[in-house]
Image 1 (cartoon, helix red, strand yellow):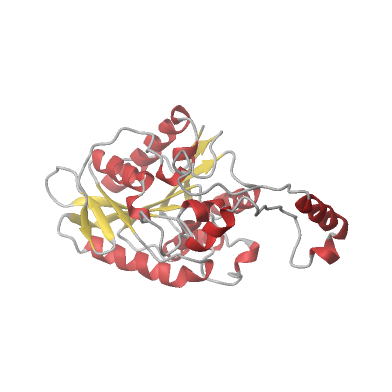
Image 2: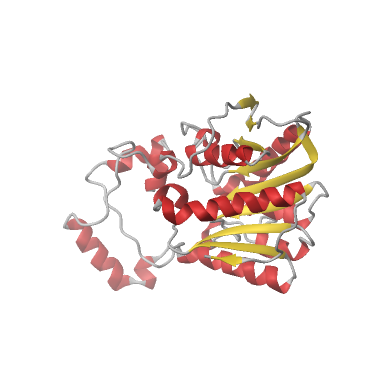
Length: 310
């Protein structure tokens, strides 16, 4: 809920009233039946004014997604094409491209839009500093029911990027973040020949139980067995929430069992969204390592199929 407030969701803004407080119970839709004693305790505490309160948007420090990127990157201008921005290095000839796919859900009215967030822009400019084209985009994952149209938006963005004459259409990488990780499933199931690498940062790699996506195609844990020789680079947060960490571990197990080319890059003390949440000295080595590994796969330099690093 705090994230929705930080993203500028008008519906969530009313919940920042100091009289509104929040509690969590590890139960389902009928807590009066499954946890009656615990629910009674929560009601008594709520009546006493206890509970967690939400911080109004932009109250003091900026929200995490608008904090500065932890690495110094060149101030390359963006080239905006529809829902896609390209950051093009000063290099001759068509260049490989890395397309960065944001997570969500992000409210439709959130401003700035994800492709303008410092983290996404930072990654794109960092890729450009390594000699490839960095790409950010906006997709319409506004709710967990929106994965179908978000996937269509990503496909359209890929086609737009590959049609650009400055892009080497045969050398593309896709990089997914957070809940955008579920969108990786299509590309793992049938990797096209031009997809040279797939990367993910603190991703959700299987639908969470209450998302209503059971049986959907958006299930990277099940898809990775079909990845074949596609290199997969995964940045794993050591302090990830348990429910998300469980999807990552299931993915790692499925990848290893299926013989996928998985490279694990750990940020041991990193949290979900570690680029702007944790100490820069903690995350900088992992970011540099991951970007250079993806670029190496794009440019044809030899790399390790499986690497675990702290």
